[in-house]
Image (cartoon, rainbow, N blue to C red; front, side, top):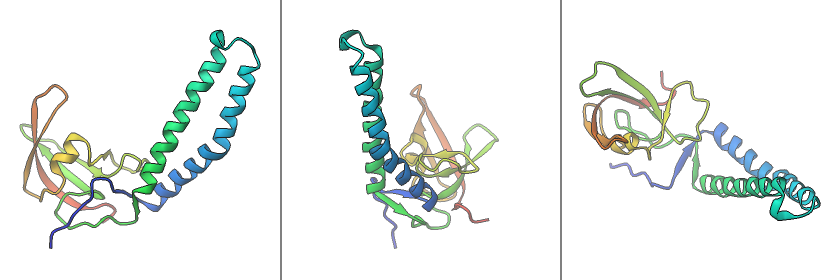
Amino acid sequence: MTETRADNVTWLTQEAYDRLKSELEHLSGPGRIEIAQKIEAAREEGDLRENGGYHAAKEEQGKIEGRILQLQGILENARVGEAPRTEGVVGPGMTVTVAFEGDDEEVTFLLASREEVGAPIDVYSPKSPLGAAINGKKVGDKATYSLPNGRGMTVEIIDATPYGAA
């Protein structure tokens, strides 16, 4: 049986989902009210062309609206709980250990959404160059991805286990 993973699905723990939902509720409710009050207060100061407070508040409003849209997209496509996983196959929600070619050091990280802050280990996005290169690979497979300088880097998958499995 082949496992499929939709590119737009974001797997989140319940804690991450609840935190993002709370942030969205704050920004789209009290957050919007607060920024509207800042804009109104700055508008009352006079000439808007030379009003730094007004322009700063409008910029902040743009950032808040952008974050609201980002959160809505994440939560709309979120799947809460355990990602479908197969032991030994790299995918979201897996703790992955890789060895970089030409280096004796191994690196272990969680392959998950960047919204999964607070994990006790580093988190790499499945959409990052390394994450995309190893997603779907099996233990023992090698994958090559592009570094920012354009050079290729090859890694070998040493281990892939569900996150939280001891």
